[in-house]
Length: 522
Image 1 (tube, rainbow, N blue to C red):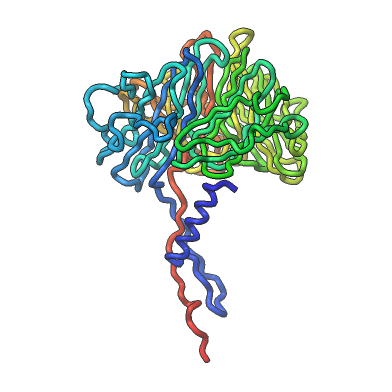
Image 2 (cartoon, rainbow, N blue to C red):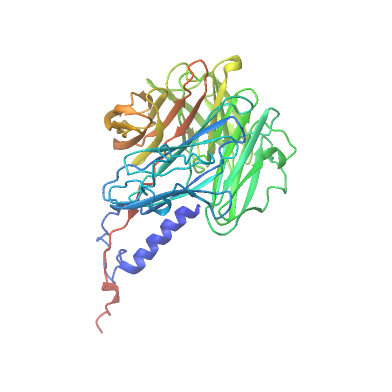
């Protein structure tokens, strides 16, 4: 179980100890009385980590920060991003702790420099988050852009999202590389990596804390574990980042590799950068926790090749039914009705042009007996020398609300899936980074389908904007945002799933029952 989950349990236990919310029955009590349902309250502090974007001198990176407006959040707040390169970290933005603070969340006033988020002096990324409801962008150029660590508090914390998008004009890993900067954690699974010839994959580790973190990196191929001692006990310095080339951790070439990052001490952010000589590159972010049923949302309609990678970490094989949730309903891909996943081994399945020009999401369910599995797909768009690739991991559902920053007037596709029951979602477009007003639309997604919805665009949009997706009613929904490059002749793209943005946390209501302390009559 992940440390974040344990922390919530520990917090709930502490709350129970202090307030007595868990009623204790006296002798003879029937136990009919129950505690009130837990309330969901805005979080007060959020941490995010962004890996170093690229080793290419041709890289141009944009960071977009956004916090949605959250009812009940504190009036004031702060948000800062700092460089992870030197451990202590240099402040990303002249405003320091005052950046983005104030009753209305105005940026700190420090002259005219940094209007676009860049201080214009040394090309290092500078990002000063603005008021909740308004996205802010920053830029970085070349191979020297460092990893970033960030913390938001108060009004800036609930649902804080930072999108990192990098365009690489040429060379290995060319194209559009994007990811949502991640929260620190203690365990990560990455099915879809590779050590094959023609692939250059790195695992990036970022430590937000003031003490060193120690991590083990395990690799699993088609025949099981790829033995190596190099990945054991890797130390990531305080406030720093590390990048490890997977092919240096093992001398075995494997097309499909699952990377397991297990933190012994401390906590980290982790992501895999997968670069291909022929099909460009993108970020492979961590898959949803191992589960018996999985959803891989938002496979582009024009995908020319889709490869599904699966791994089961337990001691039992898994047999899964494969379905494609299309706009008209669930479809079973011909020849791939089921897939068998051997315990401890990575399985790869070529699904070809499975979407056939329509929106689609993969839904994986057990044929019998639930065995936890992790999964991801590698998607290729384009033909011949114009091919580009991206990765979509299995995702958690949208939940109460999910957020995607850096959307453009053109080139943004939002895909929403209701794998079981019909659901209704509300999609809101924020104001633009340079102007525009919010817009909202509501959509009904039929059960068993995937829909590429017509996203609202802010009126008078200038710059880019953020999208939030909220579940209004019905069954669970999953979503993914596809962002395509501005050059229509090139198939560059990147896909980000939209899991719950962690804007609220469940807090049990206090209830005290001291009857257990009463002594029975003599």
